[in-house]
Image (cartoon, rainbow, N blue to C red; front, side):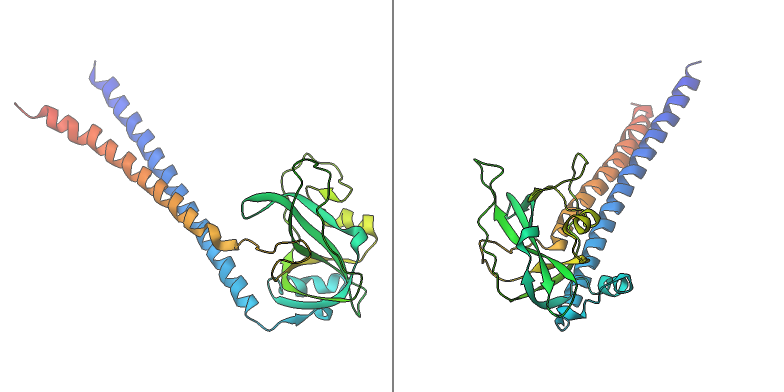
Length: 247
């Protein structure tokens, strides 16, 4: 009567161990996949950035130009125009060099075009005493020439929903921003390059900087998978056989 319960328990332990090995091994493969995605993204970005710089007037407006602009992401761009500072937005809770602050975004009216390109001009540290205070950023009223890389619309951070207004926001919704400003805003942005200026830093993070982290996580998951398998073999196979040997 005692063999059947023991036999059932052995199958249960085997099932649990097999599930543990499968789950941890799959998580390791997932981490490797994430590393490959970031590496491929960085390679594509590097390849795009190595091409000849484009003129801002090549950003053909309208729905027919959306596909073209999406293919130009990460290309170097030199654009001439005038700032529209009344529509500047400070994206809150953005970090640079592990310090919290704002990403300052200002739309630029492209010269010789009716289109408006939002420029991610750089990062500014926020006031720790007055959270409603805007950082001192200099914005020229004259014609300017800006260099940078074409980038997607800023990614969203977690928020509590609802429409945001005012110069300080958690996220910037493209559709709402177009309606609010009345401008022909393109769905891409310019990530401005260059050294610190106008009260802004431009030490943008590298997209593939987390590859080593994913490799480390994958090693941990594979190690845990191997440990589960090793413990099962030791306690369920090796030890019982050693105990059955005659003294």
